[in-house]
Length: 208
Image 1 (spheres, rainbow, N blue to C red):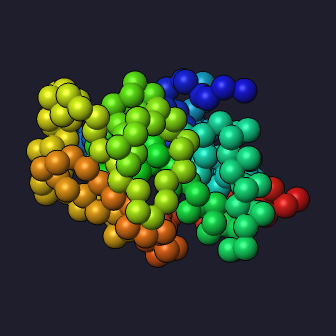
Image 2: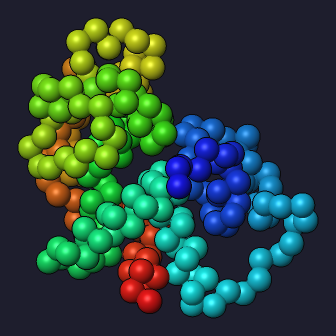
């Protein structure tokens, strides 16, 4: 099954939380979730109490939607995390954070992960000097992310250069705003990754 290409604001309403899928718009009064936080559908029904399975499913769906992955791709990443020696849930989050599209977003080169994915597939970025157009490419400490020659003059990156001057990036990333380059300086620790996920629920969902 392909990625969900429907209105992303419906996904926030379905999960009952702001997933910040539309970049800057999510921080304004135009945010659909702020104006209508009820679940999508014909009737604005009140949320009912859910059981353990429902909680696990919703947490898995929330994480998958935030990182913009399809079910098959997300399940494959979970299986990779499960084979590792680290705590499975934490390892899963770390794999998600080290994806190329997520790092481009975290560095501030894109306003959303969808935009980061588009920039990467259009060939705007390089890793360690070599062109990489695969959003799922796994980065590692020591890798450098940079714009390819001639891209810095494009409007989205001119705007990014201005915002990066005052932007605060993740502790495990370092950015050189004037040169529009970023470095992965370390593997993110759990306290450096999003705290609004309960990754243990995701592990329980796939371990049923």
